Length: 69
Image (cartoon, rainbow, N blue to C red; front, side, top):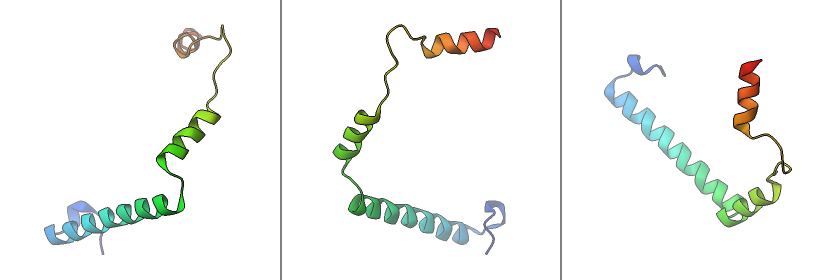
């Protein structure tokens, strides 16, 4: 079966879209069952977040330095 959109009939394209959507929905359902809750994920992100030390250059300053080189 061709996967190039320009080669697909409307019905083939429709089936392909349905297949992709169903696949994504199934993945999300499995991830929610097997993984952590949103709250746990956000808490984990907060725990691993790195904060630069005071006085460190900002990302804008770093970009400007890089541009000026």
